[in-house]
Length: 504
Length: 90
Image 1 (cartoon, one colour):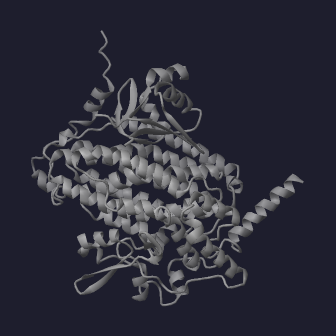
Image 2 (spheres, each protein chain N blue to C red):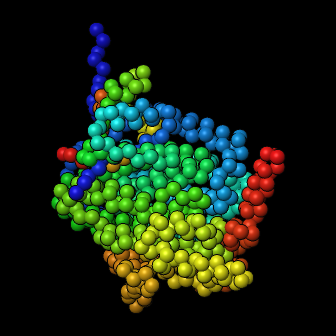
Image 3 (cartoon, rainbow over the protein chains, first blue to last red):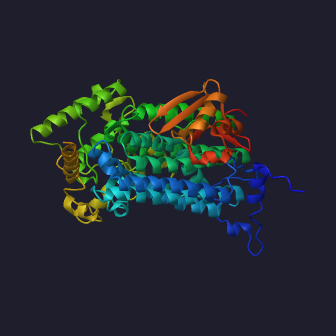
């Protein structure tokens, strides 16, 4: 007689629970020293549920299959010189920003989840956090492998780890993850697992990667969607974390709410880079940042917070401000990079007439009124040989580390500027959201490594811009400045000329 | 206020029978086509039935195979041997 096959739920229970044990040589509190100081109260770790019921053997099987598919595409892309078939040479610049600014954060996430997987004492979250840790390592590896092919042809990619730790705008995503990783394990899970993975990463990996596909980059869309297929599991972990904490004890609510508020705002600031990639850097745009925000925050986030209201959790503080900023953020960010193109490791350009018309159509309330005139003026200046460069080092926000170029809520012609005092020093902020975050943890944020302050203190190679660019290992004249006139543009035009010759 | 349950899948041959099964089994589903991906939204909940997928695929299908083609989701997930669902209902 054969035994009846176990159902998925029973199988999962047998293969995960009972993997842990009560320690006997050392007290549990010494083995798990970090899961109490944040004030989170857990009565019953076994109440944790894993909706994805993925056991380790199934995990390896599916991940191996995903890798096989991905590497087949990467190989095919390289063998067929796929880089010559993207929409335009400018496209490579989104990959530069991705590899220097986003991929290293996958590695930070890998380390953060390894830490959470070690230090949470319940077996359910530990298994899930360990799987996610492995996923994140897979993500940075596949991103490096995919983009390494572009590195054979395009500038700005070769020094990505060195740049990530030093270059001014890369401190924005780096400090975001440094902040999460230097928090306790529960805050890390809410910061990255919930606020970033559940509420915000769709904005990065779905419409942006779809944009990569639309621009002919099969290899990037494949790693993007392959990573995002893990992301569905991560989102499930994120929502499970928040439900679990809120169900365990009513005292957890104010702590969790504070983290949701903080990490929503921090994530919103970091994703401003993606807004600019979608609206300005994809030669063929696929969806505007504002449209993506409506689908993935207003609509999807709305459903989520409506559901979480039963625990007393409210939508993140300043969500209304963030939604209003979706009309402005990509334009303001691209303007910042245009002015500082000499210090950026990717190329900039002004949107052409057709692209500006697309922006007018997508941003009827703001583009023609506030941003088109500025870009047209800069275009005119460039034509007259007076291309505008901003040679002053900007004031950075103490929290998000972005140059303070954003405008007041409701008044897009006035720069938003906030400040506060701590231990006799003045600290500056781009927004109320960033100021609140500082004021809740001033001891932490007063220590921030701000690139501009570090340059002025003499810690970045010297006092002049060439000294600093050398410290960044920037290949001046190739990695930086406008796309027009760059070696990238020259190479791209040669490829195009070759194609025409071939056709004749 | 509307609460959409949602699945985003690859837009490829492997996912096509799953997409078709979802459209057949979830009346009122909204389909958003993007380059490379398709987002399926349905008020309240969305279900993928093993039997419907198998009928279109012509072979046995384990609902966990959805891991190979899923890109994103919204809603609380429930999964067993016969179906895979996302829902905001309790």
